[in-house]
Length: 361
Image (tube, rainbow, N blue to C red; front, top):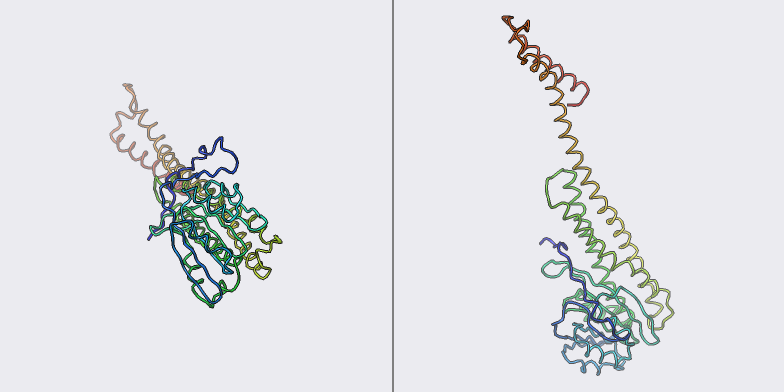
């Protein structure tokens, strides 16, 4: 199934809702205002594993401090009171909670004494093959990871499958490795998005090289420009985010797991390089399109000029013998009409041979 591009303007979050509010006021800024809060809990050790789904925030309070690794995935950001209750129970800073429910927040990292807070964008193609950009926040604690996302559709199924496997590294490497696994799943989908973007650029390039007619080419190029700018805006800050994790001295990420975050850093550099390459290519597509149109116009003008040049002397001759003078010597000549046609045909053929010799035809 063909993946759908972003051809329509995306509604921007209503940031005006937070105007005049005190810093740290938890106000949901986004479009999905009618979703039900769903909470998924993955609780495991090296030898045990349990899954628990609930709609009640209080159910997650039983999983803190049980000497197990707990992944709490909260779907739905519109119920701010429930977000506040979670924040109060885990001792999260009010400014952090404000960023969780603000879907317009750029990717960032904040380090606190007992936890690390990450904000980034999750990009993927949903079941309908529509391009989705979703706000997600990650809180990494000593023995827990809490993820807050807008809806219940995500790209973490491979991580869930690895958690169920008792022999997997994720079951033996602590909360820091779990957070890495979630970030790695998000970054892997960035590659999918970039590859799809590259296919679109190559498709338009092929159309331009083949000089295919189409009024929608400019619309496709403009759509790609908006798409690459949106992707770049959401991915560009991640280099700093991952770099700070790699350089951090936090005890929440074991030294043996730092190599995995360094690998993430390499991935984000690779992704950004590809984005910059496709950005330059997209910017060049419009120039290529205008050059193609200009070449076609030059070809048309060339043909019209040649036709005009051929008929100028013929028109001159016809003009002379079309004058209403009584005493034109050739008017009385028996073969004047045929001679005039012969001269005009010779001029026509001569000019064609001249243009071909000059390689203008």
